[in-house]
Length: 148
Image (cartoon, rainbow, N blue to C red; front, side, top):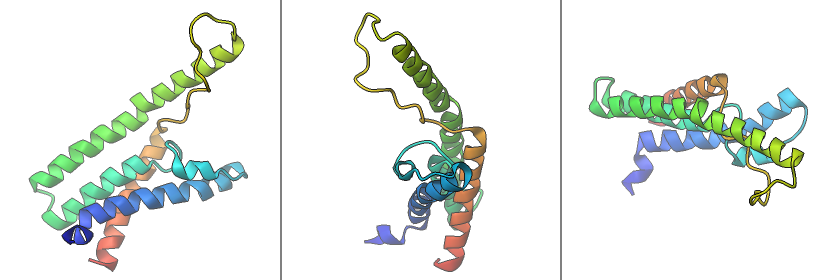
């Protein structure tokens, strides 16, 4: 049962849940419409992936020190995850959008069209990644202060 006392794990998981939850009210404020599905999907403000990995790195840094090997590993994994979210996954979403537009513009094209439209909201804008990272770090600091 010691997994329940694992500060880095708990901080990262809490960051994911909180980041996903606050996507809905942020979307409501910025777009003046509800989108409850955003709480269970990828993309959006803030990046829950960035929040999770940065929260994990921060919690490891708090618990083991900034010179620990674990902290170094967590920072590198965080950098790769955030680069992927703002780079490769974002571009995959842009490609999906263009493919969806082509499939609707040319419905009689040869080949097997997708059964439904491809998911377009896959990655994040850089600001969503940065806010997610800062949010995750803040969650670790607050959780450490309040509970640990």
